[in-house]
Length: 191
Image (cartoon, rainbow, N blue to C red; front, side):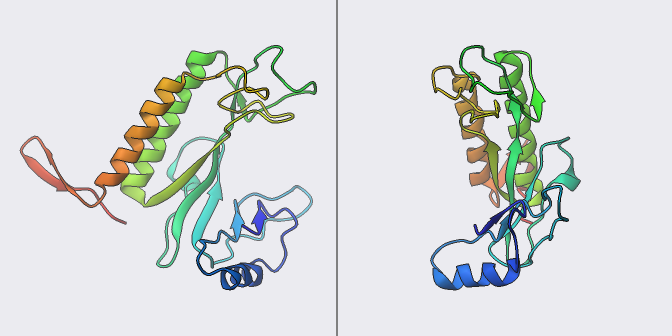
């Protein structure tokens, strides 16, 4: 991935092609989150090449916030989530933030499950191939990790996180297979 959210981005299609040619065995995401940009410059937009149509989204889970695959590239939600939880005595000593601060571990866990259910719907019915949650652990000023900065506190119920992650993966394995629902046989869509 040469660029993320247009930070320092220039000649994105050319650099994406160069990156792909440099190592053709790897998948290339030319500009993850092409829809986001620093405030001092406009977003360059989708470079139109590489292996992914990749967007970032931290707001309401609605179809327009999700990328669609095209004839040559998989759809990827390169960043989503951003749900935070303050855990006293386990944060970097600066003002901390997240896209949304939740009140407790239970609410954060339930919200994560909701988000994964939404991801699963886009995977099954809209062709989403990947989604990357922000983030594994808290960092210097962001408290939107699954665990705290010092890795001492699990901020979500990780058994429930494991369960929903496995359910979504299992659903992905069913795409394109026939499934009986009552007396009706249906095929998961492949778009």
